[in-house]
Image (tube, one colour):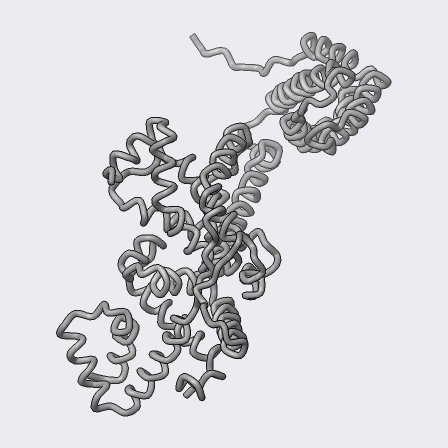
Length: 193
Length: 270
């Protein structure tokens, strides 16, 4: 694999094939984060394309003292938040959209038994609804930590906040999720105090 | 370890970010404290449910066409106007920290209001009303008035010439930006108010009337749409023509040149 810094250097000098390599390398990462943030494959597609468009525009401003992935995460979060402000409606859409064949979606869910499949779909919907209840900042922190495996320090850098802020935001996010999912207490031992 | 310390470390513990020593303390506390053990269990269960989330994965065709779509977007973007970076930042700030953003907005408004009040208080006409008895003689005031009127007429003439010579017939499809004209006319409008209040002398009646006529036209220009407002431009042009404003400005400027009083200066004793 070609070194990231070399790729970025080539992309900065106008080499489209180098930029394409960067896109190919990170498109899934950006798309997945956008999906975590928006909850809709359609929006995730728009956001991820917009992210790379902004990256292309601002190649010059990439200083190289951070990882490309961190830079992309930061831009992706900003694009998601920006999009959210533009939309009057909530971004998160119910899971039905995801399973309606948009972009030829295939879910990891291999359950074939109708009851199991229905249960699984219900859980997915509840998770999405719970995520929707989080504030934009809470959702950003939670999805970066929980689904994208960034450390709290990396999240702090990405969102330009302190590690302490990340910790407390994550704590509040988990508390909210716990309340939202409290009806699962019988199945998963959840519940409010 | 206290319950408080436990809560503080809990999030890091779940995501494996505790130092070995902290982890040992945390685990031993969970073993002996039933209250914290219960909290721990519930949080673990919540995160367990959240782990069950499945990301739907687009198919190969989607990923195959990804670059092609992006490339065409880049091409389109190359010719499209761009949004301001700072506007982006501002929107994100409002979204993330609405309280801070609104507080900052209120502070800026307050400062702007202060500046506006300050500028109003420091206007020459306002200052003169306080200082005329001390440092400004009537002749010097008149010179000042004439100078301001001259400047006002000069600026008005330039603006009107631009509007009168504006070709509204051959501009279809072209973006015509009238924001500058609107801004200048607003400045002239506020200047006209101040001038009319000052021009009280019997020999200034004609100038006062001209400023008043110009005020109407300036109001029309200030209310033009920023772009493509051709019908309104035509109305302004006919108004200027009907009132012979450019001619009157020229005449008035010629008169001013003739009768501009010179402030008396005392000759130094030699």
